[in-house]
Length: 452
Image 1 (cartoon, rainbow, N blue to C red):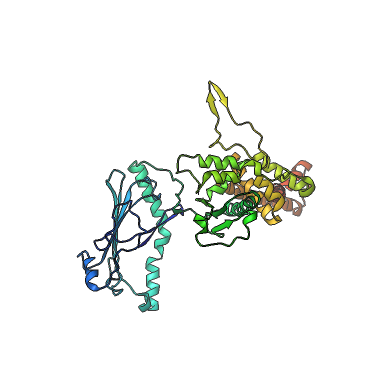
Image 2 (tube, helix red, strand yellow):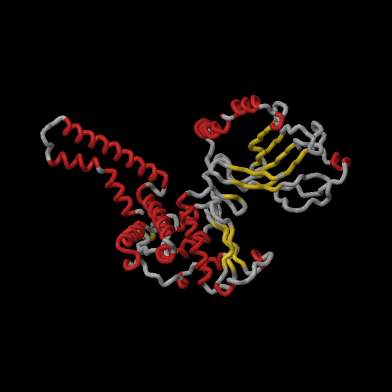
């Protein structure tokens, strides 16, 4: 059985489970592997019947596995699941498709915490035999369920938190075998630039291995192998990804790209993630941390200037300077500490990172513009909205709507005053009205100058 588990954070985990029974002689413990082939194939009806638990005359699928995926904020990532599912099409795909599944969540202390059942209350419906009226009736009866699911989840979560006072577990980052959330538009732009940057670093650094890069998100090519310059024309052989001197580098969550651009020294970011002891906060996985760090060491960086006004122009120079000034030391990795009653904090200057310089000098205009705008917006959110960029976006649209409203009011007052033949307005009042009337234009000019 292929089982897909989703949570409300748009993360997924796929499990490939095989039935635990006498014929397969398979270990049914949670730690047992589920990738082994069936030890004895089913050949005849008598053998099928030996697999059946005589409950309602159905073939019953059972399996247990360790929990390694965050689903509910009221449960940790520890424990295990046990699934019991009846084959709805038994025997030989002739069943009526009635569902009868039971899943049990067991805590790390071997206590059953949750028992959930999904079962059919009526006979199943074959869509091929439904009339147009029956189809419309079915859609009218059930179409509201999908829209109502999330509000119901929030309501039940409120009951558990406020009434039952259950402990809340904050969402950890996904592990290697899970699928991270969808990337945002800004993370998608940064990922595209990072892919180009990583390819260039691998080609430039004299490595004796290739790099297999696996991105997080679904917008771009998920997996790509980068070669050093002297291995660019080697054939791609079967098994090359694991046994041909290949370093695997897998980004677990798009949060990696948002964290990356907050560092002036990328090697510092990679080191901090490698040294991160808590796997609930790690954003990438690599098969060899030492080799990965070698790629991003500062001794291999390009000798590109920080900002060259002769190539980028004074407007672009101003924009990149703003980005440079906005970047600060990430507090998570370089906090202010107390040592013998003295406060020690990071007072270094933060130049443009090697990735910034690569994008500025070696990428096309579209990628440069998108990257700089995305990075600048994320860095502004660090200063104004504690890094929550959604709040900054909401404030940005609130400012626009407010300026539109004031512009309409100011324009109306100026027009009404002249239409009614009133005496000329005072210079100060008239100037204020003109500024309000053109407030939206002034805001767009400021926005285009700093971010575009």
